[in-house]
Length: 461
Image 1 (cartoon, rainbow, N blue to C red):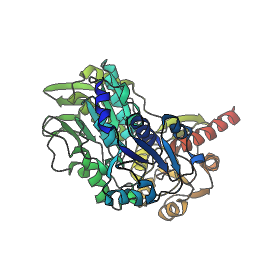
Image 2 (image 1 turned 90 degrees about the vertical axis):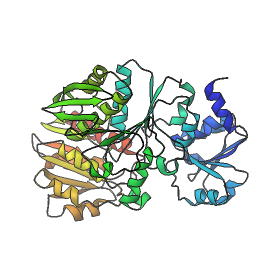
Image 3 (image 1 turned 60 degrees about the vertical axis):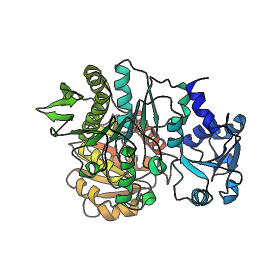
Image 4 (image 1 turned 60 degrees about the horizontal axis):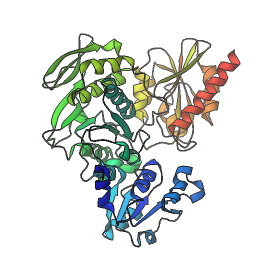
């Protein structure tokens, strides 16, 4: 019997309700189906609207429930597994707690089933996916077995069976996943930065920040907490029992990674030296240089050779939909930053370009104030093309700052940007809002932008 099977046996005979059938919920239901006495998987969407992977759960003996999420679902249930998209305060989840049903999240479930303690977890308001993917590349360059999962798009429960005790797991972790962690303890926990986000879910910046700090709460003296020395809110994380390692623009009092004389320097676990020139980091933008230093901190903390870290920094180009160069038409560059779903991320995007920008922004607001984005646009943004549900809020913030145009869709926004841009400009999709008013996710929105740019290229040819 494998170690994974031994751990899974702890759930034998449980009567489980999985709430939410995105990737995480599907992964949780599928992994528990072979041992649980009963697994019911529910979603507020009708069954016919579920993704095919969710509908196929019935083949594994999972009972599917769509639509009504009333308390009747809790009958004969002794464990509720919450998907990240389902709030901790959701009525069904609250009813389960009141009824004495154990409630855990998909991340906590996965942690209890992990056969490896080599866990590197990454959270923050912005840059999580890029940093997580970069860390995976660092481990691969070192010749180590690594699995990248979590909020990055592959549920951690979906990869459990393929892990060995020597596998390193690099997990992107969201505030939604941290809402109900109980025993989750990464060996290395990285907090990249903090800026107000998900206020529609957490209620206030302070509550959101507290949720992020939970990534450190179960760590001990043999673990590492990687913090951003340039971000005051990140550095306020208290009750840290792990060894603190800092990254930032200046050398910190203690171990870390920093900039000095144009080079990326390090002092981690008694090893000191230069990784490479800062200009050699392949990822674009100052915010990505910060992400690169965070990844270097984390990988060096678990013993990845400095040479492998430097090779990854010099070669890793980033992920789609994050400052992704999409094409050039009539000497105008088009950049897809659809992943910029909050103000802080859009601010980082603006700071990554020197020349004039035609900004495409909009979507569904998270309840943030757009004033800081409008202020940063002054003198840098030639025009702003606003689309979607939040365009009135954006227009109120941008009024009198830059010329404004309205569009119904991203495709129409690209067409209007063509008329506003001049040779040498950058047309930047950096929405500062979620995609959920018109799209399933930010990937779908970014792909729509890329198709519109491809149409321009064909027309110019």
